[in-house]
Image (tube, rainbow, N blue to C red; front, side, top):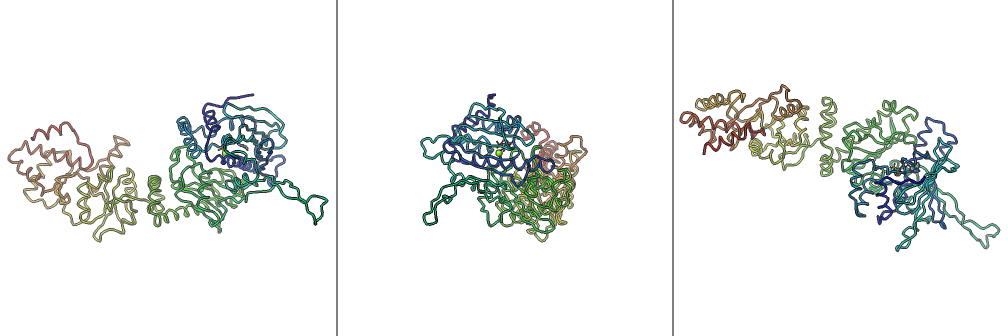
Length: 628
Ligand code: ADP
Ligand code: MG
């Protein structure tokens, strides 16, 4: 029965068929990777099910040619497909479920766009249509007696019909296109050597034997050694080294090969930030190849994102994402772990509690931490790029469960510092503290510029103190959760006393005290305290919250629940040496109405400086204009 492809498949097919994509050769990698997956799947099933005629040592992928008929064939004796599988797996593009993919596909117009799509999403099976004008798939599933044939001539649709398939598995037959203007453009895929090279290039690490029919010279029967004559005979020969890339020594693999593997295996178009090759032989033994991506994948942070490396044991992929191997705070790490130490027959649920697995997980955790620390000290710019992508996640995780993982994470966190406005660690900050400094100073702001222009930060900077600018919403929460860093407390510079030889409050003389009392009476319950301060530099006023809960925290909690009983103290600090203070002092006796207005303006300005809203902008504007 002939069926039409779904709309988006048709569109992609159309682009494939007409593609001038320069890396057409990747089709070979795609079919082989599907064959390899099919063998993995069968092998996994064989752990728990009896499969008729199953012999693991016979599992393989075969590549052969029929030159006169322009056919290239790839066979596997893996899991195979039944009619539904064919319909569901080959009738639609695997990745078409992704919304992002659909959107990009709709927008794609040029061949460049197509390359981008392939690079970003991969197109798996459909890449065969870049080199073939007709494709036939004959297959029989391991648990079926009936075989099926799927065939398609490209853009329009496909046909599925029952047919005789003598052995379990799948055969993909490509009818290779005729060459166009470019000589050998397609015909190269009908010759042993170029195809051999492709397999070595892209699929060498595949752990199943990829066997190819290759010619060997053989002595013709009947001729003597004096006059030897040879004929060519064809024999299947294994062409890949079968050693998965994660099992090869670091020195045997180039950086480029690791990147290539990462991109192909994890469907990412961007280079990684870090490749970690781990080989451990001790209480537990395992090999791992782990990657830190440079970009956040589209589904990262969503429910759909699955964390954890692939887990292989005894050469069988037993899990696609082994969560138990990776703590949540490193969920961005992707990769492969292989060990002989976990028992294959336990269920996936039990596997999570496996003792060996726990030990591997601890070791993996340490390796990742070690790598991050090394990046932090030796490749600062790379680390900063890493932190820009995943830092927020690390901070959130450092807070989780009442800081359970704080010790492991606190030295990996970066905060913007007033020194050159660059990110620093808490360790670096503390190392740079002045001898008389008792606290880690910080200020909360929405941007670095805003933080830098606050009067309080200005005064401290002038005196040579460093301040952390908490410009990420979670920064203050994290440090509040920590409470201190190696017993040094965090202190907001706009709130509370800073433990320096500053003069806050206290010694207001008789005259000044009268002014303060006056302000108190005018503002009533709107403030909790009013005092003089010498830390305002050239600024007249600031509103602070003292040592308790800060304005930012108050706002944060209120945003969670408006009726939350949280109250940040409001302390109005005035600069007793400022002209505004003197004017107010004069006005109190002479022009009481004007003095009240001054107080109101100072209060509203204090709010603004503290990042709070003006209570009534219209009234405030009118108030100011009334003084002109
Ligand atoms: P992906 O490999 O990313 O799933 P593909 O487009 O390469 O996407 O393949 C689509 C699906 O077709 C596979 O997921 C698999 O279910 C099925 N498939 C392809 N080739 C084979 C094969 N040789 N044996 C069994 N199933 C296959
Ligand atoms: Mg595939």
